[in-house]
Length: 339
Image (cartoon, rainbow, N blue to C red; front, side, top):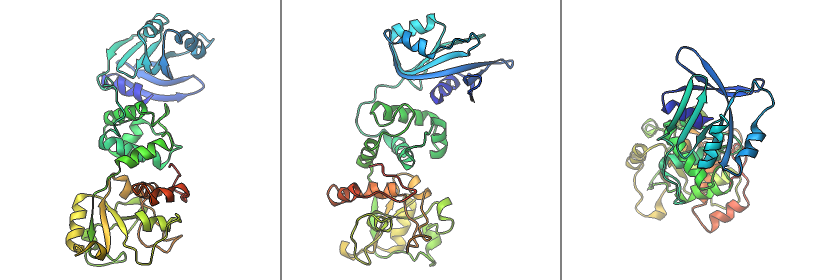
């Protein structure tokens, strides 16, 4: 439905989602002059000349008053397109073509936003693909549509649609936009390359004159952006099977490069790696620092934590001990075991 609405809107056609099980309609086309055309939406991965007749029988209803139906598929062969058209059915081939027919309505057009080259398996598709993958893995049972993801990630719907298409082509999301577990996690781990710097001191969580400049974000932790504890120390707080000594240098994610530069300037650079007090990293995706966890009610830790997903992604960078830890760790809520 998201793809259909996006395709229609790219042609200047107004369409809205309207879930109505009683009247069996999913979207409504709004024509100039106030006329509205209700449509059912049926989705599948493939429609061919061999499958189309059985699919039409399965999707048809006995009632003569049924709304017109639009078939949305990843691929519709040329013969199947002809069969759908002869039967008076509309269709959207997600490779980039829409045919939409109804009273006072005729659309037969390529959709440039969908007509993209085939995506080969060469890693996640840029920054948007990484952000979308992280969003899906935070709550793997929740269906997230294109427009909802675009809003949550502050991205254009067209960019999100492209990223979903890339993930689907790689077999990393299903037809309902849910992540394929654990494949998507390990693909994301391959692209998880945070940039960081060691520092000679760490700020005091409860105060200090430099805290405002460092944008720690210690107030309203779960509704604001700020620093977040990650990697080994955070794993220990979450109960992962890690063994660390007292005073182990903590690792933090910060929201942006500017905060990283300011942290290095104010906290200093250690003379040697063994003398470092901690490490500060730029969050690979904004969700790291905007979806923080307040652990003060259930653990002796005053620093906000990253979501367990991001701890796991950090641990996964160690192909030895880190991955051994992941093998036996099931995180506490709000985390989900996606590896």
